[in-house]
Image 1 (tube, rainbow, N blue to C red):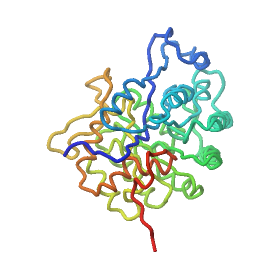
Image 2 (image 1 turned 90 degrees about the vertical axis):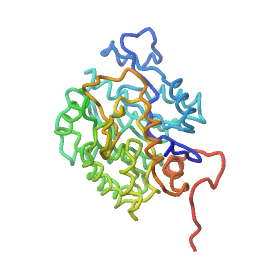
Image 3 (image 1 turned 60 degrees about the vertical axis):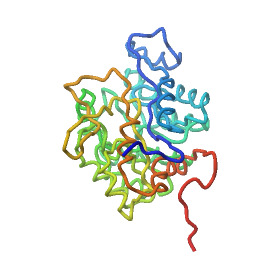
Image 4 (image 1 turned 180 degrees about the horizontal axis):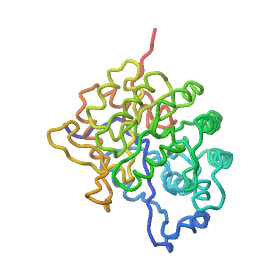
Length: 353
């Protein structure tokens, strides 16, 4: 099998910014760099050249830019304005998080919501992500699910107000030091990160807000599938739940595709392009034979990982109708996020009597 091709291809999970170390002279956002003075070794910059190159090579029409790890809403918005036909973006509470990490002021849901509200009011963003905004500062404290539920509901109310999608991070990588940091968080505040079953309650209370379960349980975590199974359970019960599939190996598509409560209509392709969670390992003769995995013995990747190529090859192994594949590769994302296509009637739709 070759690469999967679609009529209009959208990657819903891309990080178009990169980090530079000890290169302060290359500042791209003076306001933001004032915030990161407490992190003098880190600077973010646009990686759009490599991104556009990969998009052209693999015929990816549009990508959704997500901020993470100090990547800024402002730089993503700038990239969207410069390439409106290729990029759209989601926003997060980046400045609120950085202030908390630098000890300027504690993370607070009201400040986070205010930052999100200001960003969404510009009309530059199609959703909230990566993941539900949260306190990930060094001084975070364990909170109850009731308190976290209240925080999430405030975010959902904002999404409902602006009629945008939200993302729910499901799973965390294993291998690099970041994996252990995330695992440490699971035992404290981030119950929703490690337990997608909690999305049941939110999805039921906000049926009109699309919720993307990012990674759908598979994120540089090797061949473990326990969180993936939980994500399927949630998706089976709610029409507004979508599963992000870009790091799935081919065999993982079987269950949701034949499940009458999920199907191709609620799968979206999102690869995490630009992140360090997608190097692939090879396990000949096994299932899966190749998979996204952070190999601590290999070390940190210094190259731009080719996640488009691997992910599209896995999708290319599926023997499904092209119209179904077109929904996974772009149609569902276009409908959910309001992404414009060159023509109407490009994706599967039937008139019911």
